[in-house]
Length: 435
Image (cartoon, rainbow, N blue to C red; front, side, top):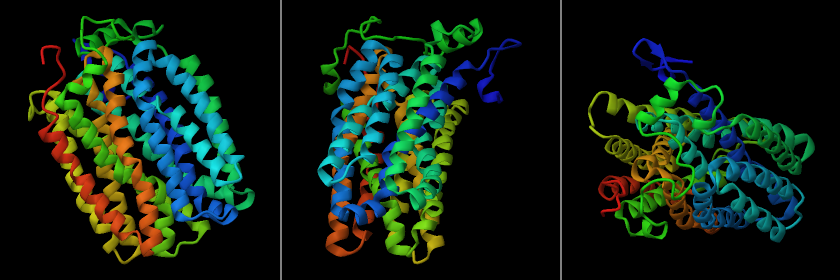
């Protein structure tokens, strides 16, 4: 691989097994987002076939987000308690089943049930990935590594529209959910075979394992495996945890609007036909892919250039600037008058939101004790999705009431920009037992 993943100890290359782990997390994340974003692609046909409204689609998005948020708390605890491999593997299999179940639904009530099950089963994915990254990477590389696998949240929606629209047109929307679920089950088997924790990996070099440990990595698989005496419940007493919760809410509010309504927004404002929707709906997410990786790189660059002396401050700066620029760009989207202008702003907004997201998921590795990285990551995600779960429903109600998505985007952009205040002024120091 590249020089990024092949640092040297003396004259020796230390190896790059940790970057194969990033590849596994990327594929798992793509499948995770493929399954949750498939609703936005199927929505136009589902609305016609099942007589659903914008509010109904928004309600499905909100039910998923709310249950997903509530299940973050036990998910993070389970990841820390039993190790990420067991929990992550079970989650893949169960969310794949929930995706296939969606394709069998025939009314709003059963769709809400299926989306709720999806919310339960997808919850361990990102906390598990954050835990795995903290195990496999030194602190200075975590934001970059997270940027690669967090780009999955954009790869899924980016590659899904053209593929899934090609399935919907001849076969109908139900086939979309069956195929996505089947892909997840295949990946589950591959993950069981391929993943190991660093100390248990059969082919990792001693040099790479030592490099990981010296940089603050290494496996603390279960709560209680370190000398840390902080209890799970006491995490909510820390100001930095509440800053992460509030900041993540600002991010999730806007991303939930994109995830649920972006294809419908393009159809409504640009008069795009369904057969062309796949291409246009995927374009903004390619900006997200670049933004996620770039955000991770910037955090590492700030450390390498000694602009910031510690990795936490470098990540906070990256998140704050990204949030401000994302908010400004989102507010401008409703004022674009052409398809090219709309897509350009969507690409830029998605890039900055993704830079925020990737760096935000690397933050628990700097803030939390090693045995509680999954828990702190899940608490951050819980807070964001619990409050942000209302944004699809609010957006649908605004669209039905006004015939426009403009107010939803403008208010969403302002909220996204507020993430900068939360991460810069509240998340100022890591969690310590002394505090």
